[in-house]
Each structure stands twice: as C-alpha cells, then as structure tokens.
Amino acid sequence: MEMKDSYQTVRNPSTGSFRDRGSRFLAFAYQVHTVDQVHRILEQLRREHHNAKHHCFAYRLGAAKETFRENDDGEPANSAGKPILGQIKAFDLSNILVVVVRYFGGTLLGVGGLINAYRSAASEALLNAEIILMTENEKIIIHFLYPATNNVMKILHEEEMKILKREFSESCVIEASIRKSHADRVRKRLEKLQEVKVFNSY
Image (tube, rainbow, N blue to C red):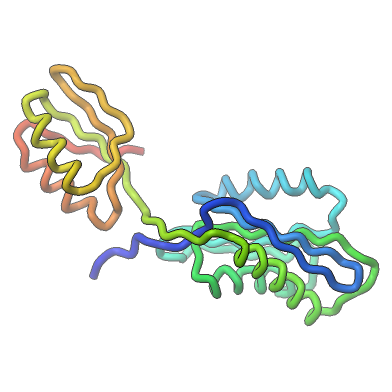
C-alpha cells in the first residue's frame, strides 16, 4: 500500500466573520506544520485581539491527519472547538489552524447558537481560502565524489527532487527534498552508484 503523503491545505492566511445578537466572531485560517507554529500564531492573535472574550481554535497536522486538537477557550464544552474542527474535516484539510475570536455582544447565545456561530465563521474563512494540494517531503543529504556528479544529477532530475543546498568540489554534497512515499526508492537508486552515500537531514 502506498504511503499517504498528500493533503489539502490553504495557500495563504484567510479570514471570515459571523455576527449574532451583538457578538462578533472573527475567523482566521493559517497553513501550519508544527504545534510550535500554532502556539506562536495564537499568541499573536491574543495580543492583537486582547479585548476579545474568547480565542477558540482547532488544528490538524500531517498527511495522515492523526494529529489534531480543539479548544473551547472558556465557552461551553464542545460549542466552539468541535464545530471549528468539524469544518476542517468537512473541507478535508490538514496542516491547518483555524482560530475564531469572539467579541461578546452582551447576549447569551446558548450552546446551539454558539455552535452555529463558530461553525459559520470557520466555514467562511475556509470558503475564502485558496485550497491547494501538497505533499509531505523528506530531506536527504547526498555525499559523492565529483566523477559521480552526472549520474547523481540525472536521478535528481528524473525523480523531480528539489535541490536545497549544493557544494561541488572534489568531494560533493547535495541536500535535496523528496516526496516521502518515494524516498526509499530514491535512496536505493542513489546508493547503487559508486562512491555515493545518502543520509537523512534533520
């Protein structure tokens, strides 16, 4: 079975909004790749919207879509984070963070009203986004002697690998990016060449 290494996400940040009985719900969608990125964006939004009552969010990471989290940030349980995550799932997205900031309008909306508001704001942000298909990639480092250059470059070209760094001298080094599901095959091709060694890049 081929490894799952492709997913849909948003190309650039996008926004959406929803109003109900005086409360304003501002939604923000971002492409993210790590939990650290999620935390940095949340900190930035909390600074920018420090007068807001709630900063609710959900995210999902990885092509396998196995890493995800939802947060109600003080709203009733499952009234905010869950409907936001529901929209991420409905659009079949990953490596994405959606934050919905609520400015309280003075009137309680009830759990049903909150679910509708957070879902609607998140949905608008995703409808306004450009959705793209991406792949999960691995980085490898290729060490070889100069006479092997043409053979190494031929494989990189045939496998449509992206060269990130290169250093050519008597002893040569290339750092390249390869689609995860192709990585084992490419390593074997390269290591069949004389005087070529392949290492993972971290």
